[in-house]
Length: 240
Ligand SMILES: Nc1ncnc2c1ncn2[C@@H]1O[C@H](COP(=O)(O)OP(=O)(O)OP(=O)(O)O)[C@@H](O)[C@H]1O
Image (cartoon, rainbow, N blue to C red; front, top):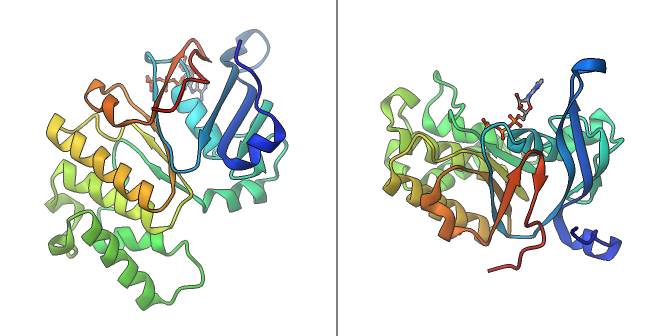
């Protein structure tokens, strides 16, 4: 049974979770999908979350991303306790969290630069020109400076995923959540994307939690969490 995380430790972590459980449905249809989950993520750490289909990975990711209401247990993200948090607190917290999903979620009618600028738009004290400059900086950081005027349809799968990364990082997040970001990519592109994500996240001291089935990227993680039937088995594994 993993030890629980004490209060002092909690403040130094990006995410700390104690006895988190989650259920879908009601009455006889009530089903437990997370069962007393305990783990933490350090600042700047890249953690992979692995486990079979249906074990609860996406549910956990969406709870940490403040996209779902926390029902039971203790879930602290960037020093915000999410159990009992108001909608306003969750909305505010979401501005500090970048999210990258499998299908890129790029807007098809916007250019690569405009898509990235949507991330920078979350930083409220910047002028339009500053946000555009920031978008160009991030496109360049992911190696797409020559593609800024292209629409998503004119980009390859790997390039679209780079745009999604640039968009997430341009909002200057403290935590990045990624759900299967490499599953649609070939192995070379997949490794390139994760290595880029790792480099940029370390430079920004941003923690990354990535759900993946992809064995080709395991060696790039600081830590790997294994989940099964709503439980995490190696929550307090050593940092590499
Ligand atoms: N909104 C929902 N309502 C009811 N049940 C749900 C809902 N979302 C997910 N589930 C169920 O909860 C369980 C966990 O789902 P979840 O998507 O978190 O798993 P996962 O590990 O991410 O799976 P996958 O790897 O296939 O994406 C599954 O049995 C799923 O069918």
